Length: 271
Length: 276
Image (cartoon, rainbow over all chains, first blue to last red):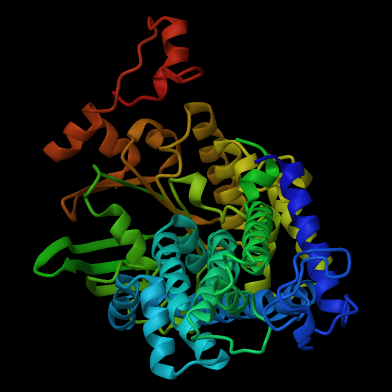
C-alpha cells in the first residue's frame, strides 16, 4: 500500500473522529426518538439512510453509535495495552520465577480463541456494557503481554542491552528507554489490526445480545435489531454493517501509518 | 590494581572457567587469547557481573581493593562505564538501533555525571572527534547509518567517554576488515598512552598482538595455560597449545596477488605483522 493511500486513510479517520466526537448532534434527528408512523422507511431525502423498526432515523443512530463503538473500542485497546505491555516486559526481563508465573497464564489465555473466551466471560458476567468491556480486555491484554514478553526476551540478550548495563545504566532505564520503544513498534502494528478486531468483537457480542443493550445505539446491537427485518428492509443491517466495515478498515490504515512512524529503518530509508 | 584470583565459573556441575588467576598493572595492555569456548568472554562477563542466569561463579575479582564479585547493584552501576568499560565484537548491536549515537553517548554522561546539556554534547563531540569520526554527523546518526568501522570507533568513543581506568575489549576487531581493525587498535593504543588506561583485549587472532599487547595470556578450556610478555609468548611459546594457536594464524604471503588479497579483505595488511 502506498503512502498517499495510507495518508488519505489517516486523514479520513481523523476527520471522521473529529466530526463524530466534537459535534453534539450532527443530524436534526434524535437517535432515540420513536416515530411509529415512519417505521422501516427506505433511504430517502428526508431520512438519508431510512428508519428502523421503531421509526428512528438510522443515520442519527449510526452517528450516535460511532461514539460508543469506536470510543469504547479505543479505550479497550489502550487499557489492554496498558495492562499487557508492562506485565509482559516485567515477565520477559525478570525471567526466572516471575516468568514462570506469567508464562502459563499467558499461554493459557492464548489457547482459547478470542470470540469463545469473550462470549463465555461476558455470559458469565451477565449482559451489559461493563461486562462486555471486562470480557474483551480480559481476552485482549494477553496478546500484548505475550508480544512485550517476547520482545523483552529477544532484546535483553542483545549486545546493546548488555552494553547499557555494563555502562552503568539501571535496569529500569534500560527497559524504559531502550526496550519499551522497541516493543511499542510491534505493539502499534498489533494494535493496528486489533482496533478493528475489537470493534468487530464488541459488535458481535452486542449482536448476540451480550454487550450494549437497547435502546442504546450501538452498531452491533443495531445489526441484531435489523436481522428480523432483513428481507423487508435490508438497509437496517446494511448501514451498521458498512459502518463497522469502514471503521475496521480505517483503523487498519491508521495503524499501518502509526507502525511506519515507529519503524526507524522505514523512516530513514537506508540499508 | 586489577587482580582476578581463583575465578571459577560453573554451569551446574560443569566447570567452564577453572580457577583462573590474572593480574593487570596500571596502563598495561593484556591480550587474552584462546579459541572460541575457552572462557574468555565468560571471564569478561563475570567482571561486569553480567553472567547469564544459570551460571555461577566463585573466587575473587579485585578492583583497587574492591571485591567485584557480590558487589551490590548500585555500587556496580557507579563503577561500570565510569571506571570499567566495555567494547564488544558485534558493533552492529552495540548501540540501541532506534536511538541516535549522540543520545546514547549523552545518556552515559547523564548516568554518571551532572553536566549541563550543552557541556554533555560538547564532551561527546570531542570524544567522537578524538575517535577520528565526523563528530557532528555521527552524533546525529542512527547506528544503521554508519559503517562497521565507524560504529566500532563510536563504540570506543562511548567506552572512553568517562575516562575509565580499565577497558575490556571483547574481540573488538574480529568482525572488522583489517584496515578498520588497525584504526580501532590504534585508538586503543592512543587511549593507553593518553591517559594510561589498562586494557584487557580478548582475541583469538594473534595477528596484531605483537604490535599492541604488552603481555599475552593464553586460555584453553577455562584455564590459563601460559602467560608472558607478548614477544616471549609469540616467539617462544612454551605450551604446545600456544604453539598451535600461533601456528593457526593464517599466513599472509607477499606473493599473494593483489586482486586476491583485495577480494579476501586483506588489502593493506602488513604481512610482517604476522608472528612467525
